[in-house]
Amino acid sequence: MLDFDYYNPTRIVFGQNRIAELNSLIPADAKVMITFGGQSAKKYGTIDAVRTALASRDIIEFGGIEANPQFDTLIKAANIAKQEKVDFLLAVGGGSVMDGTKFIGLAAKAAPEDYAGLLSHGFAPVPVTDILPLGCVATLPATGSEMNMGGVITLEGQKRPFMSPLAFPKFSLLDPDLTKTLPKEQIANGVVDAFIHVLEQYLTVPVDARIQDRTSEGILKTLIEVGPVTYRDNDDLDARKNFIWSATNALNGAIGAGVPQDWSTHMIGHELTALFGIAHGRTLTIVLPSLLRERKAKKHAKLLQFAERVWDITEGSDDEKIEAAINKTEAFFNSLDIVTNLTHYGIDDAGIDKVIANLENVGMTALSESGDLTLDIVRKILVAAK
Ligand code: NZQ
Ligand code: ZN
Image (tube, rainbow, N blue to C red; front, side, top):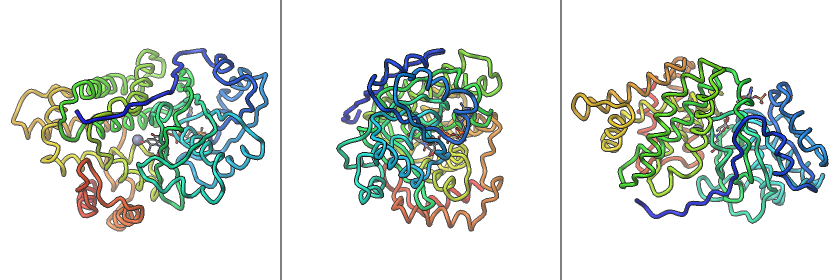
């Protein structure tokens, strides 16, 4: 196992009918800005329920945070938070709103000339010393943003990650009932996003990290069990609860501590979203199968472990087991009605050129756990994904 620091201060409040508890989770004298997305949180009554819980406080609302949140929108919110002397941010929504609210919190404590610099650090923590505290009411299980310190913001047509230990939510409320209004496609997107978060931390090289490996395998097996059930049956509460907790645990830092990580699929996928508007989870399912085939030799030992322990494949040579595991993974995505090739989304060689140019532009030229996944290899992966 590699050396690591593990820190996660987010309180999770999990269960049905617990919105009223927001009253005790947010300081009594706080002026609160409630942030939300396009319309779902209003339309389905979540904002009303939150306002009722916080009735004794001074509240302002900031709606309209886009899916794949835009830098300019968030800066507008940060400026309002400054003017209105907001003390606490409450994100009500999915990954986009939660990520966006973390960024609003950082920008609200930064000088305007430093706003753009909040995004220029890739996976290195942003050099900040203060943030407006925030909490989340999570309405879409997928990103893990409810219990992690990162986010992804769109600036000038590119997806830009940021991180800071200050950006952990103080708490996140995970109420399964709030996710029942999600369209089926968003459930599918969430299942595959969480699945691939685990794989990006698990499918690298072995370092004898048994807790991380076995926890990862447990999350993957749980998603294989409960993902399709939640996708097809809106009323299976037990499956839904297990899906929600899987998504949170897939990216709260625990399974990634002390192991190598390979976020190549995400970095390539992000540009497919930025350029062509494909939902985040779906972009990952296009890239991952081809990437695993291309990197079979490097990832041999962990791919074999994945085949045997997650997909229970016992027959055949090592190579046959690995190929069967990649095929089963792709079939799992397809079973959620997700199409896993570029052509389906109308992306041709010219589109692939644009992805490569975008990655080059943001300096993502040496991806993977070993930093040897070059743009030439990215091109091969995308051509194979056509
Ligand atoms: O805007 P509204 O009207 O609220 O609709 C949203 C949105 O259109 C809707 N929705 C959310 N909750 C709903 C609901 N509709 C009905 N009922 C509900 N309960 O769902 C749509 C998608 O929401 P969004 O928040 O964009 O989806 P997701 O949670 O998948 O977040 C994706 C964003 O997270 C980033 C992605 O890049 C993308 O910007 N990521 C963040 C990560 C992190 N913080 O660690 C890691 C991820 O890998 C990912 O990159
Ligand atoms: Zn993701």
